[in-house]
Length: 118
Image (tube, rainbow, N blue to C red; front, side):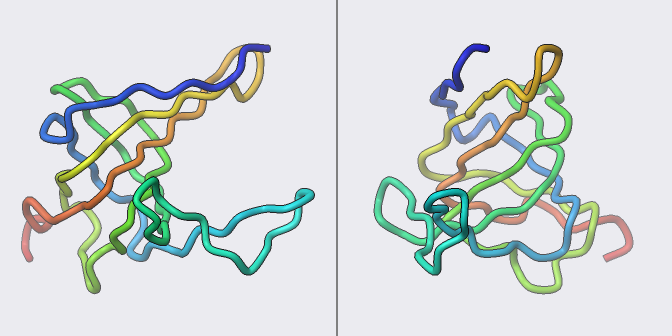
């Protein structure tokens, strides 16, 4: 099976709708066990992760995992949109023979608009 690969992406072309209300810290794994050491961004900042639906350049990607140096804003209503600022890349890895998993690294995420009714 092919290995994973990464593609740089223009951050201004990415929109993300989180499917959770909180991000969680990402940790390093050693010998398939979670360590207490945080995973770090290329700039050395701790990473946070959350799931969501992404659009890049107007094309919907579907479900993705997002890694960012920024936590989701507190009390962010579901249905809100986030834009990406700073460095961004998409990582693609095979899950099995027929499917791929997508992870978007977003240096920073900031709300574009809140969900309707907010």
